[in-house]
Length: 223
Image (cartoon, rainbow, N blue to C red):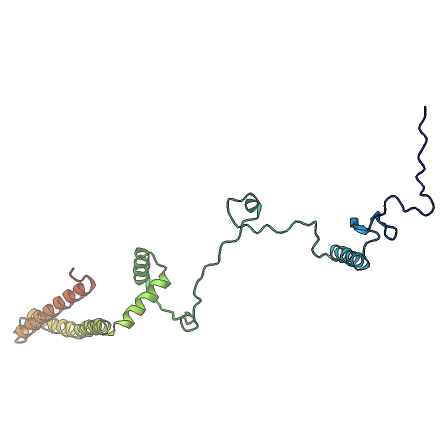
């Protein structure tokens, strides 16, 4: 026995099956971009939903934020898995104070040395773990900042040079006098100036000895 197919068409004057009242009905409809709304909802709500859908489409088209996009992970915990996958950050720059114009060494002063002096400078710079130019700059500034000691050293060197220059003429005169005494003795003549010449030689000998001792003391001061 077959069941008769029910007539789903409404009778004239009867309300539709899916309506809640005779004046209102609803059905599901698909709006653009997957927004599910009621087709016969209130006019204001439907227009607002359509405008919201249009704004979402505009943001996605123009490169703006999209509801489905992933947001940036705000966690800064180094033990976080996502934090570990991020590229390592650059180390902070050293906070080095820049040199002022007054502290920059832009002036150059050259000096000349003989072979022995140059080797002495190189040996002293190596002993101090400095470059030759840096050692010379340090030594010059140290001498300039201690003028009392520097002036005394310079005065002592000048005095030694004066004594050395004075010994030259004295030795020359003594040599001439000794030659005269030797010539007189060879002629079997008396040389009355012989005693004074010998006294002069002894005096110069003492001066030379004092000069050499003073020079050695200045080169190798006592500890």
